[in-house]
Image (cartoon, rainbow, N blue to C red; front, side, top):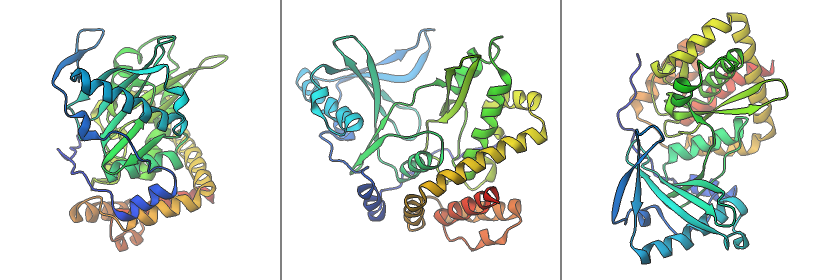
Length: 343
């Protein structure tokens, strides 16, 4: 069993990262900040349909404070979804604000509802952490998923990523007879490869979701990361491979059952090829991002040294030992793996 750091420190946004966010339209002035939401007067636990504590608390504000927050948060939603088109705000209001005391980022979850048809959506307000922002950007550029987020000073706004949480999927869906076990095994192998290539850690079952899409003859699945706090922070190579977390054992057992070694290599190569193509199509933006990472601090010297030594041994490539920080290691890892994919 592998152990993850108990509490990853939060890294401030550097001047270089602020410049990157400004250049690519991620830095947007917001009418409300994270600290404004901390001024609630009361809270009570949010219980799921089965009567279990969700680790979220629904928070309550004074009437005057809630009126201000309703206006400000619907504007934030418009900035996130429509680039600030306020014409969409007239029929929207904040239905509920939840606060999570579990994990590193302690996010607020905002439920926005359309009072015409009761349709609703969520977004999140978090403290801005450089690690998470790099993780979000790498996901946006190198994965099959687009990520919508904006940043202002020390506040990060993220859209909701829809899907069934991995732990709930394992508990409630994995043994259903209609589940296509081969396809979910394939997608987990590809997800495992994506996380390793871009060095995204801590993909335990509650840090990703399963997106199920009905197809004409069956269902398609996609595994999507939802927690990016552990982007290139840990020193152990296995921390970047979801297959090694005990919480994922039931899905790993499916992979062992349905995917042999040659087929696994095929799926890995498919994912590497697709990532190489995405890298090529966004090469200038990826270069700007990696260059910014190389000037930043995202981990401790001990973890950086451990990771570059383990990757040098794994890839039989001593060029990793020349890396000076996590940004260098990410750059080298992308280069080593995705260059092979091109060949």
